[in-house]
Image 1 (cartoon, rainbow, N blue to C red):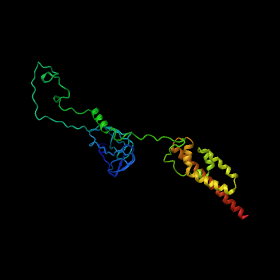
Image 2: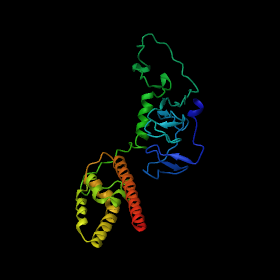
Image 3: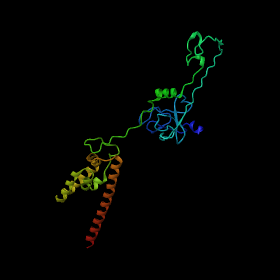
Image 4: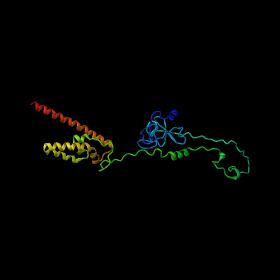
Length: 265
């Protein structure tokens, strides 16, 4: 374990301790969140209270959310004590003290009370509380706080679209009228009325509506009803796309068989 806690990054990667993003070795700031990239070791962090990564054993700041060496979360990291600087200074000459029975034992020369931090007691090492105080003062804001969860803007008219929603919707393209009824876009039901239009106009209306909903379907569905998360929304749309493709293939196969059978007759 001691050898692991002294380890440093041996490749060209440096993970951001704030957001866990992989960065090139030697970079100054994270390319994603902009936090400064800092290397931590037990030698360079004498005044810090540091943790040992539970996965690779590397030293990390206690404020870090991710290990800067392997990128793992530090929630299960192990607290390790810092190496306190033992800069003891021994005076070259010690002035002899004469015993005076008439003096107060708790007093020093000239009748003054001896300060517990005076030179008569010698150097006083910093306590762990002082080390932690210096750590929070000097490095408390180096990594910031973990990313807060993104706001769920679904079901809000004009709400901001998450990046994972902006893509083509196959279900809206292949089954626009039926898809809209279950995806928060109920006005697509008016497309059923296209069946009463002349064949040429019906074809034009359905093609235009299908292309439009294929492009804007996800946007309309995200803002049309409340979804639990982007992942749940994408899973729902993916399942509908699977059904739409299977149904389209089945209908196309039936049309081919019908054409073949009527042609043969």
